[in-house]
Length: 210
Image 1: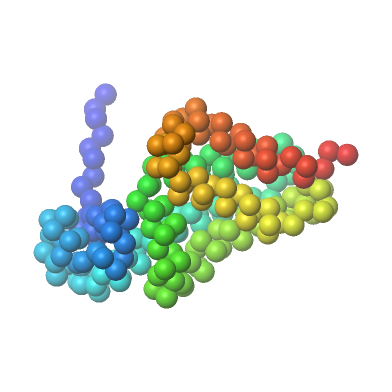
Image 2 (image 1 turned 30 degrees about the horizontal axis):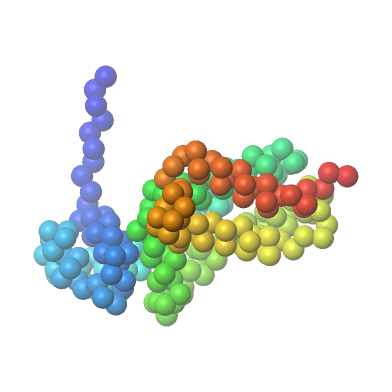
């Protein structure tokens, strides 16, 4: 079989990739356009040409990742017809969220750390993507509650917050977990265990099985 030809990345794509890596390593404030251009092996003026400077590139690095998170939530978290479909969808979403932490460590570092410190720069992106993704999860839980798939006492927003907090904490603490406990999401078997535990922890006591 003929091998697929790997498409060469465009200069903007290359700059976003390098930018994500450097912003994750050094943070937004400490990263310079010279650093980015040097690692990307391009003329520094191209950052201004394509992104109107470091802030524009930083916004694009976050926007690309955040948009993908919204797309995933929108595609997976569709109102389920029954308990079986609810479980399938929440399993798919959990698996995707955990896998993303492993496959995109630089992006996750930026989202975990800089989203709060650089909210003045990223606030509109957060509202248009990540907040909408979170609210999609809230709506998914609320709709399932209305359909009596879930118990009547649950708070959809608190349920979604607990779910997200669990995953984000795991993402932030990967180095510590690997060093002190010998556990990492890079291990597929451990990631599967985490997924099963999170789903059971989320659903235990809220499934309406009367």
